Image 1 (cartoon, helix red, strand yellow):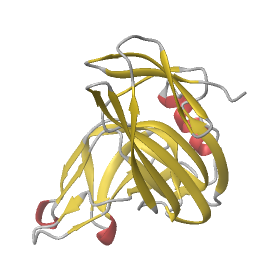
Image 2 (tube, one colour):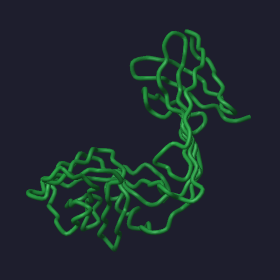
Image 3 (tube, one colour):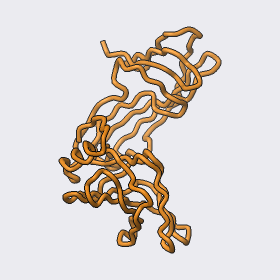
Length: 228
């Protein structure tokens, strides 16, 4: 699925309908793109590079709080990425990749949401382990197309620089490298860079130049420079 900003539910549903639910695609790239001014908060990725297999997925655009009665409860936060499990005609079913369901005994598991009429809104929800027990959502929940990395994809690679903060003239980053098992980093390393008080200024990591543009309560404003 080609990534693009979907601004209407109609466009979202049309794009998903044109995309097969099966068949992984290899993607490689970088986020953010060179030259784009970006703000990053503490704990968020400053740079991500990837070469991985991805499957079609969706990201929910509202919170889900669904009571299944004796079966338990489903809670899914807005922005959660979900993997498409079924896409036949207008029907689309997607499930969380982490626990979002708790039963009456305190056991947890994945949860699934279903759009039954292809309007770009989830209508019902269920626990993945008991998919036949469904309940109607109190209000339809919109979603947008996205891509799900294959957790155990062949030759998957991803590196991430996470912004840890800046204080006392030191910028702190965390380098995390993922390989094949994309759920767990294969290696990590904490990095520190001396910085001055004025902006802009540039730091270099490997072959990457990062121009720091400012620092305030919203986070670090920066720009990745194009490779020469």
